[in-house]
Length: 290
Ligand code: GLU
Image (cartoon, rainbow, N blue to C red):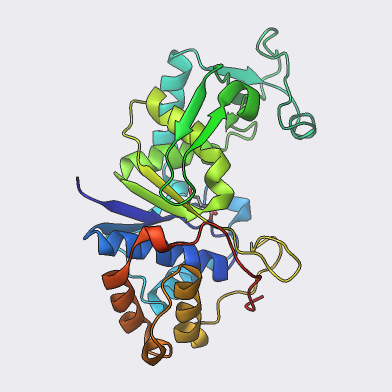
């Protein structure tokens, strides 16, 4: 099987240390398996795209020696493909229009509306999946197997919002299939969302990639590093030190002589050593780069 990995940043701000760890892990797993490594810009929600951030993200990856194959895919240009997939799911009878407000939907993780029984009359509706009462188990190369009951634990999730924007869940599945992604290594914040993606893949007759979710990196306040809690943007001038820190987090500490070496040398060394079994399953201590 040919290996294709990917890094799929949302351009809502600059990359931070958590993004670097995810990018390095998926890059190394691809290179160690003689695979290709693609970048996909998840600019699905244009108002959330920070001006200049796409170029900045690509420049940052390049500075860290994370050179991608092919032209990066842009989700903002993929609307026809998402529409087609949604239509297939509609034909299979899984999708229903829903007029509930975001506040109602957010009021409870398993909020149940009655739009399924009483279809809304207003024109502005979201399209949601009526999840079946089945359990999905996904093997995870780092975290181990995960089983989720779709109806009880996930609920009826959104595929297209009222403002017509397609959801991350639909887009990610369609794009992973289009890019023929065979291996997904990403942050564990998406671990819980994987069973629903696997189910959508089955409905759409797509091949299921293998998954590995990395431990979350938390800051000094015990929060997950994200753009929302203002994780410090990666300092490109510190690339060698940050790379060596990322490798250490991933259970592949570089030998002393390599710690200040150019990123390309560190990555080459790490690709030769890479063993996904060495990636820690839990985050140890909060890190200093916040
Ligand atoms: N776009 C998501 C993020 O920036 C990642 C999605 C994925 O890897 O599936 O967190």
